[in-house]
Length: 389
Image 1 (tube, rainbow, N blue to C red):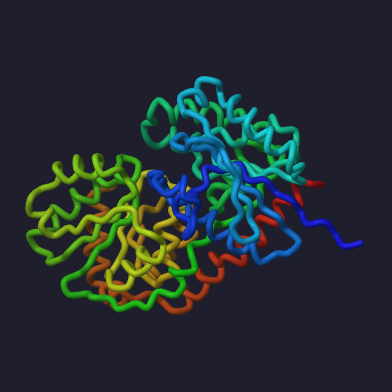
Image 2 (image 1 turned 120 degrees about the vertical axis):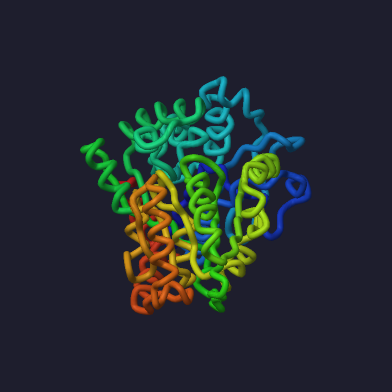
């Protein structure tokens, strides 16, 4: 008898709006965070005939819920207002997703991220499940102020981590953090791989004037205040230009631009909501990527730059040292240290490799293997097996 494929139901805020071909009812939805790592893993799982993935997601601005198939994956888009989801402590989500799972009878549920209560819903479903940590809110709380919603999610995170059967997380830092605080927790490290477009970047660095690039959201945690303070101090003596790419809303970006000095605005090009292929092309010419973050477990922008061969100047915090080898493919400085950031930028601009937009070739090869989509898929399949036995 042929073996039945493993059926896995993802509970995910999957970025369905970013799919290349989507049904007409979804085409007018606003684009959310692209969550490219889920796209990458799905593309690898699509190659496996012994695996069947169903993705369950909720959206507000649709007339009714429906399902559609793309490749070997089935998407189940459910309609639910966000205020009712939160007010019910995700019991509305649970009821809707239980209905889908009742028909699917999955072998396993994969709960992606804490932000929309996926692990809580998975626990209520009664199926074996894997919880994927996309951000450590307990650790963020120790490093930076949290919004009211993030404080709520941090409390849920503690509850879910205490009872999750298997948790995946990315960096060695995050693995150790979870093991120290939850000694009984089974933790599987599974790095989220960048889109393949970043592995194929053809670098044409333009070092004169030095071309900096920043990719990320706007805010205190990401250190965007430090970024512009440092560049303001360097501007009188250093010729440079900056490309600033953000997934923040147009209103947030407009308000942020108003807070920047006129001289720095003239040197900065702002871009938003780029597809992975477009973002990869943006990494062809910059001299180096800057990320003065105050707290990050595994920033996707750093991984993308590392596999593209772009030198990275970043805070020595969280999982970043897993990807940036000091002196080999970038430089690290103490988080929150403005003068340390400035001095490190000056050192990078005098470095024989980094000033020319280059990295050590052996380190580039090592990072590409470490962050490969194939390795990502293998690690998640191991987590699935761990959760089922």
